[in-house]
Image 1 (cartoon, rainbow, N blue to C red):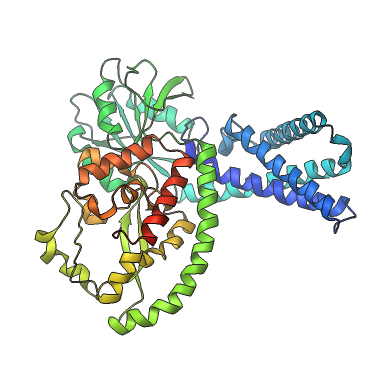
Image 2: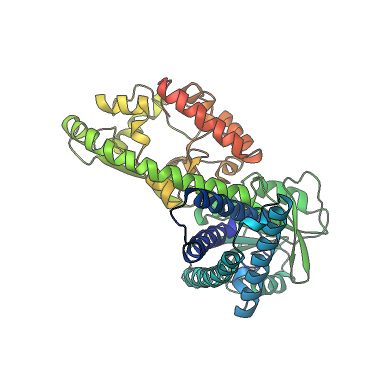
Length: 466
């Protein structure tokens, strides 16, 4: 989130806090100003107006830089930005009400109270969030791990420039020096050999790459990192051919072109995350009831824990614990090596339809996807999304080739395009990678809805397991 160093999803947390501030401020203003709280007509009028205000805000932040450089703003600058934003919201709302000839129906005092409350609450929430983020960044948490590709004689200057624009969000994990070099580190950042970059990216969960090289040398470098699903920033004087989802950013006196495999916008990711949270809350309630029903059956058929936790690899190689209702006998992970010769999948993924490690009720849970319900906790935490790519196990991830990395460019999902395009019938891992990359490149909210609908149909039809 450090200012002009741009990636699309960085400001979603501030957007959600702003929406919370708008909703609460409007409710407070309504309760204070409107005497007829129980009047159904008044309630409906102002409820609809509140929805319109939130919609205006979302449109404004989707098409502006309302949160640009948010972590580096001074207190006075933050106050000014919030006042401008609220002024724009009220202005657009009044124009809309005037055009609909309904402006006289609403309380001007309520609008005034709303603006005062919203400015104060938005400022307080943003400052608290910034304090939390800066503290976490200083502790090395929630940071984006970055490598820089450049020449030895420019490396120190470029690192200094990037650090001036950094608020702690970017953690520089390595430098790749083009040409022969005996350096082992620069500015206390390790120097990595280009031929070792795949292993380094996997081991360090690298998110982004900054490339500062001369014209004509960037093409292969960009392709090398883009195929791994990383977000790539390149100096503007470099070749721009065959770049997808391009944006231009300013880093001090450097102008860079940014390209990434994902086409998702801030607004789309905000809606996707909000929907994830809503569905995950409902899903956790259902999971609680299911736990009561399935726990005794699981324990009767296979003594041991009801839940199974496994380390999986998520977005950009970040690991997390994924939860399921246990469907295998205890100790089954150790028996996997004995079954590798029966693997029905090609590539670094294991699948066995008649897996002897699965107990009878476990087969039923897998067939109906009941074992997946605890993953709503992963969705609620933000490790996963409702729709995405299926997260690989650590041992599968370690076998990934360069082009396989691109499927980790988005948050993993409970379901995805692979599952609804054939579920168990697809046995070629390269086909899975192709489908996942198509989803990431062509992401849209309507596509997510279609995938969810197809998943529900597939689950109720019990057409294979995921």
